[in-house]
Length: 78
Image: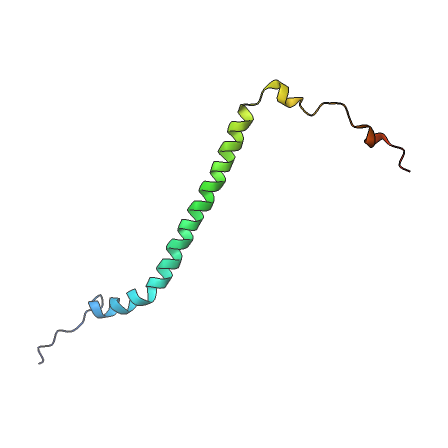
């Protein structure tokens, strides 16, 4: 019998190769998760800001586009 220890299935030798190969995949995964969180937070921020600005409108803002139409729209079209 030899006195050399046998590597177990979860030993350092078997996980060392797995860590090296999964490191780029983990980096890509975490980067995509961070990018998704950033996109969602920007979208939520835009929605909250638009709702905040909509609440601050006055009744006069609803009728701000009611004005004299320019005469060029009613031309003969020569």
